[in-house]
Image (cartoon, rainbow, N blue to C red; front, side, top):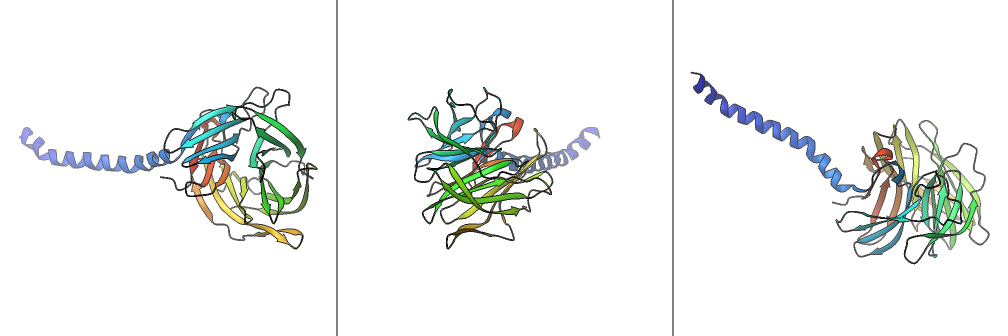
Length: 309
């Protein structure tokens, strides 16, 4: 009777195996898909992306300059990352000039409109206009200056420049944290005088993430004045992390005055329950998109073109 009883149980055993495989597949496949979407850049806490700006776009090939928020002298500050089709991301270090003191805690990066240069910003509000050399292996520092009237205790994590109505508009932001709102500032930059004239500010809280949220971890402004921000939640060097991308409103001129028309109901355009987004860039054209980079602390850095499959 034992053999016949065993044979009767074989179909049930197969059914159990099929159910287990199906459940396992349902659990693991979404994580694999997500892992394919996010492309690893570099491992380790020294290689997080805290800001990014487009260097060159050719067909489906994108090159970005990125900044790392390191503080010690010999730690990396800059790199070029290259995205070409589905190939692995190429990471190429960029040297900070030896005759210029390395910045502490670079948190943001933007291109300078109508110039072949970039502006990097530290969390303390010190701006560095930099230019890549012909081989993109090092930079020269063209000028450096401080943001105006940075309140004590501020942590500036976002900075962007845009040419609006033929004026160079600067937008920067204190990140805020938890119940403390982020603060967005705006003004006009005079490059010749190395001076920003601040004309306004506004508080901002995001609906997602919550908890250990940093309301503004980066921002960019498009040519029409629309401001896109990233927000991030950081529970520690090993996560867990959460992030979102939102459009928070638009800046423009009312007469000679710059004004911000703020969206009172923020809509998350993208959410991540796994990554800490601190870099954002807007790339125009058919092969462009909203590109984000992460500072996942001990887990290193990743990059993603939103919606890319």
